[in-house]
Length: 563
Image (cartoon, rainbow, N blue to C red; front, top):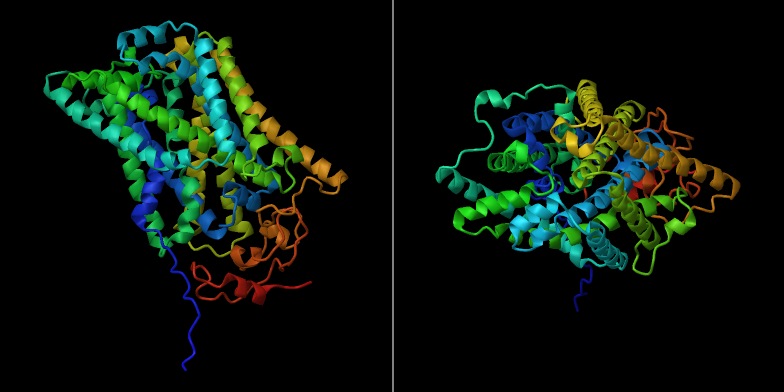
């Protein structure tokens, strides 16, 4: 009798299409939330968005693609910066991400209190309430209570809202934008005149001092986040061609979303009457009147509210989860490392909820909700731009310190191309940071005096950086004196390549062994390295080393240098 063949075929490897990665990138970076800020600039906002696309989006996208293809192990920015600059700077980036989310959530709470009446059909009362809010503390407490409930849900590992956020962002962006386009065309055909001046000369930004440029930092912030999806480069069949195309297509789609949304708002609402908090609601209301449906804004505010709860869940889980995992390599005290039975860093998440609550109540120190929102938004922008400056510096250092390390994708143009994107990216980020410190002329009344504005933002940024520095120094001292007892030997992070090579810090090496192969079978970060590699070891790479189907475990065994 013929012997049965029980050998199971290997599952077919999934390759992501260019279109799929393009859509992931669009969802990550594009949205209508930042459009009201840029609507102050009218037609010249098109120029600002184009400048942000060329000088910031393209450099960050190309750099993150190379870093992800050369160092694809778990950690993202924590991995890349740690490889180039060391663990302290990598930890700083995670702290920035965590605080950026915390500030963003905290700043939103007063906004909800001020816009609560928009959830009712009483539009004119909603406008009056926004201008003269009452019982805002009580209303904000209600939203904060809801936020704590969502935190509890997120700590239980609930995936429902995450799935809503994943697909709902598209619904919350593309459908409203499509409706806005149709209604705006009808509105113009009815004989209405645009609120903003029209003409080629208005594409050129008008110079009225540095204060007029302050909100431009928000344009750069609009383009942030492309690095989050760079890890998917390993799932492409032909990354050298597909990734640049996905960047180009995603950039064009995002540019269209930003420009169209901003221009529609600027067309409907005069700059003198523009309020960042209610601009989208007012736009939908005025456009809804075109079809005798002024309550249209309510449809989208309830859709966005459901998505908001979902985004709260994912934003609470994401940065806290990442920081908690990195903390297990010895960077955080044990009490902040805990993972509950649902696999979530519950203490870290509840601590973040407490910080969000404190930030929300700080609004009472300022005379205006909009001013508070603008200052926190600018703080978030500055922190995020510092984050990218660190990433660019790590990238160029890795081009020299690990020049032979294989990457399946490299920034085109050799060293010239690498330096070009680095200089352009850092220069854009520094420019964004500088102008973010200037009180915006358009909202001078809302932000109070220039001194209060600058000092508040500087203090918030300083607190974040000092927390990162203090925690890192504390972890080094504690682990040195307590035998690394903050290290969880079951953490998910592989050691850095310079640790695997027996080095004390990142430095120049000649090795061409891929990081995938070096990391295979190693003890986790913070635990003594299991298999060391010579930092100057050069090997003949298998032709398929970069392919998803490569037998990494086999190649790792062949290349290990046991000592």
